[in-house]
Length: 236
Image 1 (cartoon, helix red, strand yellow):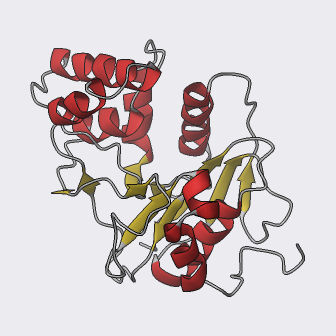
Image 2 (image 1 turned 60 degrees about the horizontal axis):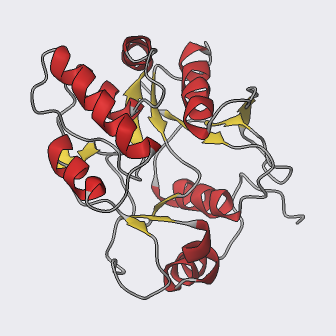
């Protein structure tokens, strides 16, 4: 069986320089088949497959619709890597993408509850409650900013199970229902401009728009991948 495809939902209207450098990092370090952009296809993107979707809901609903569209597309590989457009693979992964998680949901929930309330936390709580109802008393969180191996049939089942949730943590729902297990790591998203929270040995990174444009981490990522890859037009 060949390397899995990469599926990346992209919101409408984004020029998306983060996606450009994510693609460069995947081309350099992550074994994969095809790249599928779901939603908005930037004008500069080439040699990728495109699945257009209507983005008329919330960002959570739009990404869930995009993941379902990828799972239902007959040409997407049966197992694929679910990525975001701000996920950078900084070191070679010769054995493919490992399964990674963030630890128990209860710990992640406590982290967010101490800092803010909102749709994300509510979605985490309702997803956790649903998993507990279905026999997973201490579920793991898979809401990491790294690519995640996904089996189409299993993800479609998870999306059907969580269809009634306004905000579903689909990675977490899928990972627990499929009993993926995996290795625990801290999340790799860098939200600040300062030169901390990562090192040159970090295998994975993710950024916010501001930390990518104006932060130390963004400078580091751009230095790491200075050359255009096969997925981008040489014209700006």
